[in-house]
Image 1 (cartoon, helix red, strand yellow):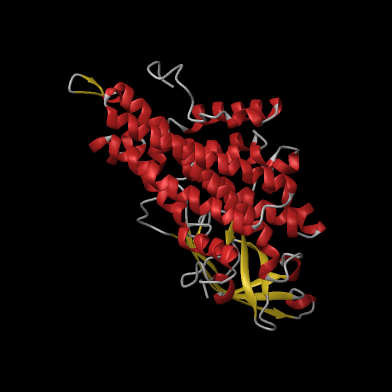
Image 2 (cartoon, rainbow, N blue to C red):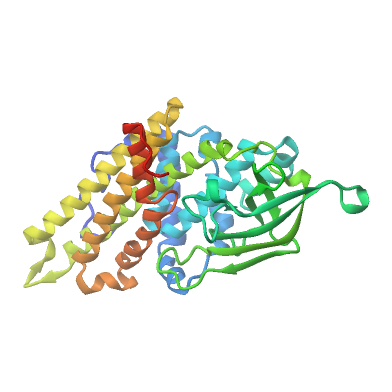
Length: 397
C-alpha cells in the first residue's frame, strides 16, 4: 500500500476478518507477505506471457495451506485464503483450488487407503500436481448426463497387467492440464453407464495434452485439451469411493463455494486498484477522488464487495454446521459473480484508457473476472438451480 492510501479503511469495510481466530489471522498475514513478495511484482508479466510460475510452488507449499479444514482451520479461513490469493493473482488462486480443492480433496474423500498412502502426501505438499478432468469439448453444464468419455473394464492375468480399464474420449478447459503429474478423469462405464473416476498418470501412452491458446482470461493458468486414445489404467487407480456422479456433489459444492470466494477477491482487488488510482491521479487540477461521480463509483464497488463478502461469511458458517446445500451455494455464486462483474467494470471505467492496459492491473482483473463468471456453474445455470429450489419446478430440463 502506498503512502497516499495508508491509513484509509480496508476493503473489508465491515471487518469480517476479525471473525477469525488469532492463529488464522497470523496465517493469513503470512500468506499476504508471501503474495506481496513472491507474486504481486511478477503476476502481470506471467499473465502477459501466459507462463505458469512453477518455481514458486515449493514456497507456496511451505505455507501449509493445503486442505485448511483438515488442518483444523475454519471454512471461513479457507475461503479467505482463496479470496486473498485472487486479490493478488486470480490465476494462482485458480491453480490452488483446482489442485487442492478438487484433486487433493478427491483423494481425501474418495481415495482408498492404498491410494492415499501412495499419492496424498506428495500432492498435499505440491511435490506432485493434479488436475480435475470433467468438462468435455461438447459438454459443460450438461456433462453429468452427456459425458462421452468412456471407460471399458478389461479382466486380465499378470501377463496382461492384471485387471485394468481402457479410456477413450476428450476433455476440455482442464486447469493445470498441460503440466500436472496426475489427471482425475471422469468417464462413463461402458458396461452399466455409471460414472467412474480414475487417477491417471499424465505420461501414460495414449494421453495427449495441448494448451488452449488465445485466452483473454486466466492466461497464467495452463488450461488444456486432453485426448485419451486407448489409455490403459490399472484397477488400482480407479477412484475407489466413486460409483456415480452424485458421489461428487459434496466435492463440487465445495469447489463452487471457493469460486464464489474468488468473486470476492476480484472485487477487493478492483477496489484496491481503483481507490489508489483515484487518490493519486490528478485531472482538472485535482485528484480524481475529489469528483462526486468517482466517489459514487468507489462506494458502489465497496458496497458490492462487502455484500458479497457477507454472503460468503454466512455460507462458511453453514459449512461449519454441515448444512450448506447446493441451492444456497448456487445463489451465492450467482449473486457474487454478478456483483463482481459490475464492480470490475466500474473499476475499469474509473481508470479510463489506463484501464485497458495490464500495467495498471485493472485490465487483468477485468478480464479474469469473465472466467469466474462462467466456471463452476455459469451465472445462468446457478440461477436456475436456485429457481428450481424456490419454485419446485425445473427450468433447466
